[in-house]
Image (cartoon, rainbow, N blue to C red):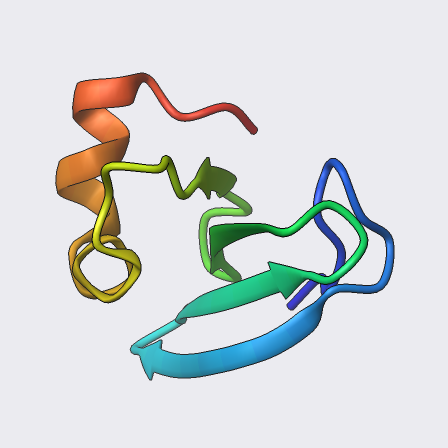
Length: 76
């Protein structure tokens, strides 16, 4: 799993879970005071990042990243 965000090369890992070949991680950037979820699937090579918005529940986004990704058209 890549441990870097598009806006921070060294974020703090807050939570990590594995589901089959997929890693889902919640990160915090101390420098920018922003959080994001990264989904990384080793089998397909798919990787995307979801920024946690001010009105988001970060744990909800972490638990259901695919629901948010389809609604937001997640960026790779």
